[in-house]
Image 1 (cartoon, rainbow, N blue to C red):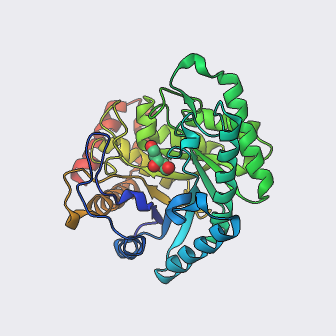
Image 2: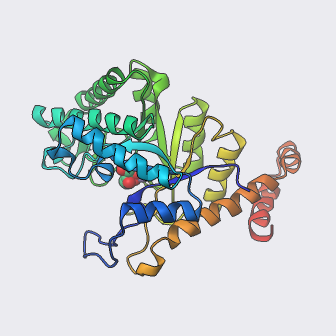
Image 3: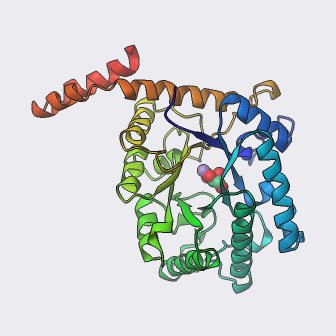
Length: 343
Ligand code: XUL
Ligand code: MN
């Protein structure tokens, strides 16, 4: 029995289109996704603002809240919670050059409008967490934007969200690049610095995605630990990644088993989940996956996480201490490999 509660986003069950080719699977309705999420063992759903209210740009503030309440009723029907809402600031013509740090004032205002509406939607879904994946907040052309100005704009935007709702929490999901060339807030270290510069640092934390950490050349377990040391790991996006290339969002643990084990171990050792945090997945099915297997990557990721949790529960801390005393790190390393391979 796992100690954790799990969450997932509707975008994790998708049609298989990528930058180079069209869809390979049929679309599935939000309600059907909820039904299967519950069946598979998820406790909560993560949303982009327009996953909840698809045509939100054409609606009034009141209409947006009314639409969001319908989705809340659907969540209730399947006994699921909403974990967070993330403004999707990368698809709209207003966000071609980013949102909060766009070079256009009108576009920056649009980004704030979407952020305030995301907070309204979160409230309608009975959740208090906003995730900012800062997709286009950086530069394609290095000289086009001052990194000083851009960083200050991000802090200002978060302060405005904290003012708009006095109890909402804001959580940055750092990523070093893609779709932009250079990100402004690329690692958990950046997130902690931005958090400290806001007007209420306790309400500003991070969402560590395994693949994003690897793209920055960092160890996801250490990024998780760094945020936890400041009590600022508000959620995680577990997945996997084959080296430093495009963002792959592979099933958790399928490429880097020991790194995955250490992510589970650091979460377990430090009581992640004791304040209601979810273990979130952000995994994509392969393009070759059939309609019938649309959820297999989610089932596999959960299964791998739970198997690694069992391994982490068995971890022999006495033996570790002995190895540390004798400086026998060869022995400790072999112990970990045997634990993973033999049980
Ligand atoms: C992009 C990414 C997003 C965010 C949610 O790399 O990870 O799916 O997690 O917007
Ligand atoms: Mn993610």
